[in-house]
Image (cartoon, rainbow, N blue to C red; front, side, top):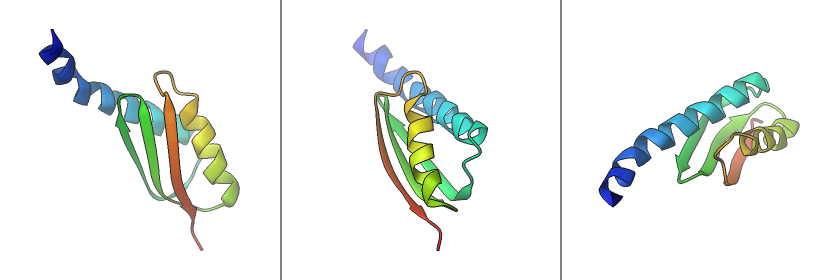
Length: 79
């Protein structure tokens, strides 16, 4: 049922965002107001982190979450 698939999409997106957030916490990625948006396996990271290395680490951590097919990393370093 196509309607059922679309009805489940918001829940799946939320669950994926939570999984990415958990992975970022486990990787000890710290920053100010990191936002995670998901849709259909695609993840968008926005916000700021404290170190340049954390930008790459966050993208790598997000890409390792099951169900993630693409990561667009727009994190910036807090200056």
